Length: 146
Image (cartoon, rainbow, N blue to C red; front, side, top):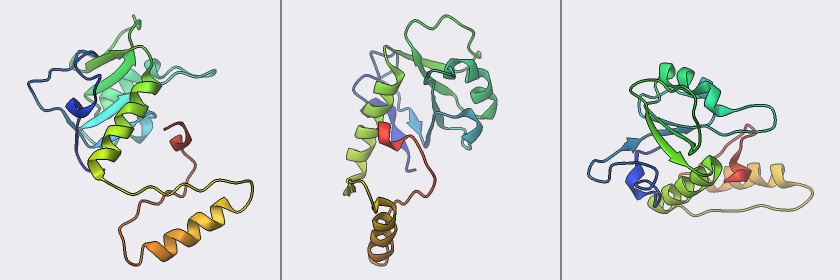
C-alpha cells in the first residue's frame, strides 16, 4: 500500500486527529496478527464472536501506533497509541478506503453474478496485468464490506 495521509479522511479531525500534522499510514488492518508495519492503522471491528478492541494491546506490540475504535469504548488502551474515536469503525474503514482509492486514481472492475466470478477474475487479471499494474487478491477478505 502506498502511504496515505489520514487527514484526507473527512472524519479525521472529528475523531480527534490533529489536522496540523501529517499522519501517514502504509497499512490498514482489522486483524492484529497481520500487522507488518510501524505505520499501520488498526481498525477495531466488532462482530458476533469477536471484539477488535480486545486486541488493541496486541496491535500496539505488533507495531500499530494508531487505532480506530468505537467512541464509547472504555477499556484499556496502550500508552502511546493514538485512538481515533468514531461511532462506527466499519463505516470509518469504508470512508478511508474510499479516500485512498480516490488518491490512487485506480480504475475498478466489479464482477457480479451467480457463477464464474472467480474464473473471470483470474482470466481478467491474466489479460490485464500484461500491460497494466493490477491489484489481485487470491485469499478471501473483508473487501466485500468496503
